[in-house]
Length: 397
Image (cartoon, rainbow, N blue to C red; front, side):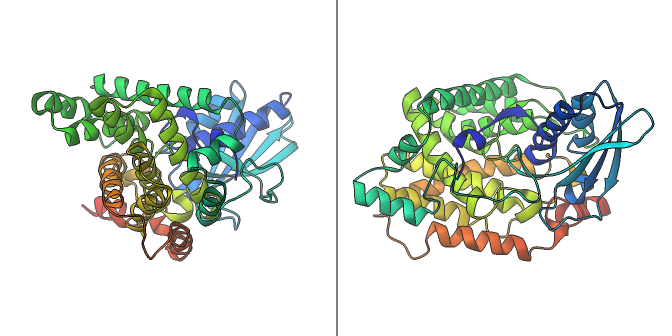
């Protein structure tokens, strides 16, 4: 498994796979072909199907400017390696091809080439399943946090502090914003209204909802957020952890440590299954975020390793089969609301696990494998293409 710095990234929304990944790929290709006269970019599969609503063409053109860029949409072309594929082509002044680069945006802003293999060599974490890590913790009398700190670089606490500050900034800015969310849905923001209702009632759940909505609405508007683990699920973890901090007085260090523990869960899911909505549906985005948040909360509340694993398992298990069906291809409906509900579900999962001694029948690793297989079996129209589910029925109305 790779470093948590590849899981938690600061960047612009609305989509880690459709915006951040293509931006990184475009920059990499541009740096290699600075002498190109113009560019042509072919977008495949889900990257093409909902790319316009996710600002894929906008971010690619902006990254490759001032050179001319032609975008070719090929939603019916689905590459075997991953549904989010793209081919960047550099042209000379006579429109001759001087370089080509086929790349895949595999979720969370991570990009990979078709022949790129995942190897344990050079990876940050030698153990890649929850069962292996729990066995290590028991053998050496260590915690999940110890496992992270022993394998990350020495600056990981400083890095996670910057991540938390970016999360806090997106909440603060989202709670103040009143503009309509861009796109033809003309969606009104709700975070500020919810927060004002919290100030009147002082009901914690209302604060949690307002925080999660603030981040998700910022993401949908193309503003800066943190992938946790994706842009589409960016509101779950800050929504619940930072509302808990403000409500219950947890220290900055405690929140940072909880983020690292939650990040470890996200890494396990990413390594053994997927966090890409185009590959496994929203179970890999909001489901993964909910699992990460549940683990983080359980750690924050003093849970054991077994209780943390159980909380993460509960949260992911009850998102199995969740489709990714964004209306008009925007990360708005049902995505924004889904983040707020996911944050509350994470809290419920943690509180449930903390009432037990951590023993249970289905392991987190088994649920992750089930989620992967469910994603493979899921029809493409339910995986970010906006051709089925809520997206289809919204159109019909």
